[in-house]
Length: 333
Ligand code: NAP
Image (cartoon, rainbow, N blue to C red):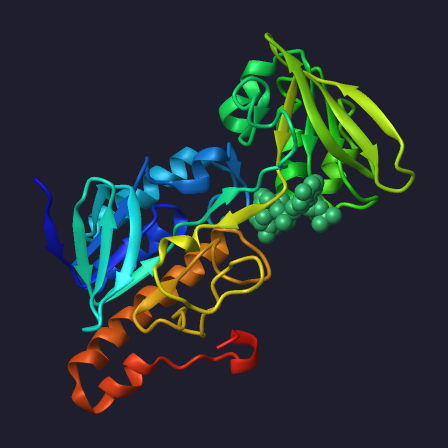
């Protein structure tokens, strides 16, 4: 039977931002539920080692995910396995979060921390060989490529870091990038260039992923400068070309940038009053575990204040109006 339950705040998404928001909201004595379709942990579950989270010189992503989950529960947040289909704000200001089981969660505030979905290359063969050579997760699939020759596509932190990780399994890793310079951090680049198993192929875009009944066999490439075509033999192709934010869960318009990342004010509130956003789906310079938990801390504390203001008729109007801290021109409203 479908349920309809009331909370003070609903956290949508169980990555580091969601877990931290739930921890703070729980600690703030708010009746809090976190909805996550899979195991809590988000991108932490796809990262073998975390080396840039203060206080932990080096910790497994899975271990940090478990610690954050325990921490949120310890402060009273409920964590439920539910796949959120959509979020809608009713005219009375209450949000309905509807899940694929048909359950409805209601609250006056929602913190959206649903992260993103890996961007696809959108070339022929990508769908056909997904799971048969094409992957978007090195930690999940790297071990299937022991001693093989594989390609990593992309030039950001994810591509450069994961290429390095994949050398523990693969015999040879080609990094295929569409320009002649990486955007990844210098430290990650230095490690990559020092790794004898890695070879970088600059200025190449992937035209097609080619294979047979045994799976992926090659990448067809085109030089972005000369237009020349070539074939790179590889049985694996790991694609790390960015994320698409999962902001489409929200019914109703709110300000976002050209790529769909949510624009918030300095309290992490979007242009929909009561809808807060934190972590990878928010417009920002960089997307780290530390920035995700920073956003989430602000969002959870701002929710406490927002709910207190709603209860106080003298500040109610300002709370529901929302106060964007960025110029309206940038918000596109
Ligand atoms: P990103 O920084 O947006 O980089 C995406 C890369 O893919 C860029 O090099 C881009 O090329 C390339 N690209 C985009 N579309 C492409 C296409 N259609 N075909 C071929 N190449 C394409 O994404 P990310 O590496 O996933 O990182 C996302 C965020 O997470 C970043 O803020 C990053 O700092 C963070 N992150 C951090 C760490 C870490 O610090 N350890 C690890 C992973 C991720 P151009 O350079 O030519 O645009």
